[in-house]
Length: 376
Image (cartoon, rainbow, N blue to C red; front, side):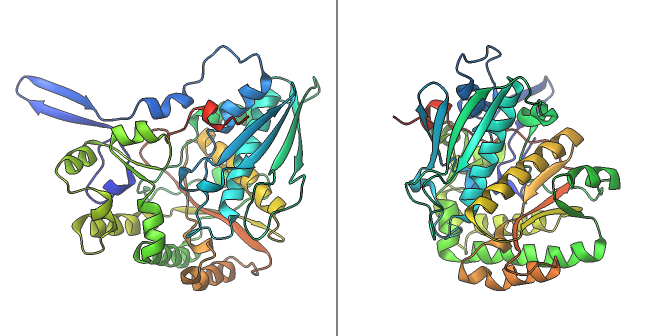
């Protein structure tokens, strides 16, 4: 897919077709090493834990930080904790979104374990819930138990097909049947035009404010991986790939400095592109919890990743619109507006908000190898 002018900072990636009288050549512009974790070896690891975790590291997570640390214990257990250097103190000052990313990780691990008739028992925050930020205490203690009564999860087949699709969505609205399928597991959806119109106004304003706030924009800019070489070298962060990125990067037009400079053409094109993306919402999905405990944040992540797997199975694109749910001061009005619009009090916390629809296919997000998450 060729990345267009309007949304080139999103890094859709793809190939560049060069046409001449002699024919057509395709110049590959995509990373290779960074997407190797998506290409699972068909030979199952002897250790069922490693099989579960090689699936779990494919989970969606904020800014693709992949903060999961795994400490293996004995032959059947593991301690999961947070790499504290991979938190997002500006856009996620209370680590709520990072915890949601642990929920997605744990659910994919559970689904993969069940495929091998292994039950994954979880003790969440065994040393207490860390507040107001995460610390070195474990997020979960896991025990893997052989259990022939464990039911295989049909969503397992969608794990490798799941994508976060940041493209502009078509105006085609998912069917009522598709939206109903996504609602399984206490997930809310809507395609109501009036509600979506008001929601678009909030989400466009929220992404605009985040990009126009220096410290939050810089947190994102520092995590940009510009061009396939950077993407392959890093394996995490936000990938900007494709022929236009490669070309403008070589000319010095696309760099962290230009993307961070609100007076530059790159910044203005990026802002315009993001506003168009957040305005293309043919349907929306949200997940709320009665409170906002760490356990509830994990549960929201579990429910969200299952919704993304259902979306993949249905052939739908999905993309979080999380800016208006964030807890820093510039988002306070948007946070209140979203809760009012969707009929939730601030105590009854909306944890995830995403758009759903149809869009061009995208490649997998970069991933670090599993071994980089294993700690002694």
